[in-house]
Amino acid sequence: MPEQDPQVRARNFDEVALGYSEDLAVEEATRCLACKNKPCVRGCPVNIDIPAFIQLVAERRFKEAAEVVAQANALAAICGRVCPQEEQCEKYCVMARVNGPVAIGRLERFVADWARENLPQNGDRPQPSPDAQKVAVVGAGPAGLTCAGDLAAKGYRVCVFEALHELGGVLRYGIPEFRLPRSILDAQIESIRRMGVEFYTNTVVGRTFTIQQLLESGFDAVFIGTGAGAPVFLNIPGEELNGVYAANEFLTRVNLMNAKDFPVEGTPLKRPRRCAVIGAGNTAMDAARTALRLGAEEVTIVYRRSREEMPARAEELHHAEEEGVKFQLLTNPVEFIGDENGWLQRMRCIRMELGEPDESGRRRPHPVPGSEFEMEVDTAIIAVGQTPNPLIRQTTEGLAVEKWGGIVVDEKTGATSIPGVFAGGDVATGAATVITAMGAGRRSAIAIDEYLKAKRGTS
Image (cartoon, rainbow, N blue to C red):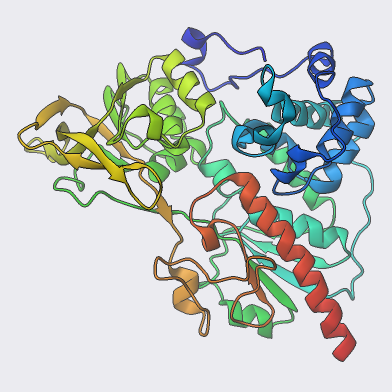
């Protein structure tokens, strides 16, 4: 796929990947063997009929291809950009054994973009009946948006309550514009709004009102899709210093609150000069590449394991390296050191070596005695994971939760311990992928539909 030149894009927030032309899309689509047993679909959490839409692309029937994708995925333009297809649908592609899998994600992006650019986007859509049953969706991230859209398509009145002042959840505050342009996100949300879904921002469920109050105020069911937005810290000395950020705070300031444009925009952000990002997942890559775009002279990924254990997508690693991000592997911070005014100046680290695999299947890192050294840094971004915000579980009596804070759900339906309350996405699984959260939202929409039909039948 055509891309911006690495040296140019490392200093702007424009989208890196430029998308297929029609001819490139058709050329790639003709590689698909249209396998009858559809192994690629097995890896798709929302069960898109992948061979069908790709065959339509190969025949230049782009409108029909977009319709096939839209039947299963209301956020296709987003998934085509940010989902790890190499670990999902493309992993099972038969062509992977020949000369690389068919680029399913890029073709999904192509048909979604083609539809947005070539088909009317403001046509009338069926609206729910005023006396239809009502469902509250808590959280406007990928799980909540998917659940809301699917329920609206089934004829329910859906109200989405979002704590932040803009919609999209992690799609807006966590993923930088150079991977997911805001115009794409806004268009996808608008398509759901046109189905009759009502959105309410600045509404913190658990503070503004509780889950129980939603059920008592006329909602027949509730879906919780509040994600995993609480940061995990290292718990080492100096984390309180100015210049030390949790990755989600750093990315939220830039992505949601436009701190990159301070002082024109009102949110301040310390401009990094020498930046260390601790962690090696997709969030770490996003933070590192964002720091570069803010003008950092040097950005280094600091990771306690080796390259083979890095959880980030291969594409994100490749893009980060192309743009000049450095990697300090088998290294773990042990202390942040500041000046007399409380500003970060250095980071003390220790070398690591790998032992036997741990519960994640990756080799467990162990510190090498006597190997401490220091790095000069004025900004450190901690990207070692997120957990669900505790507010929902603290204010919802009778809601069963895991020891680590996630909501306990039925894997097939998303049903919680409270009748009529469902949950899915990162709030139930911990931090995962966009498409996994969407799959959970879809399964819960089906289960909520069945629950409400049964409720109507007994009323």
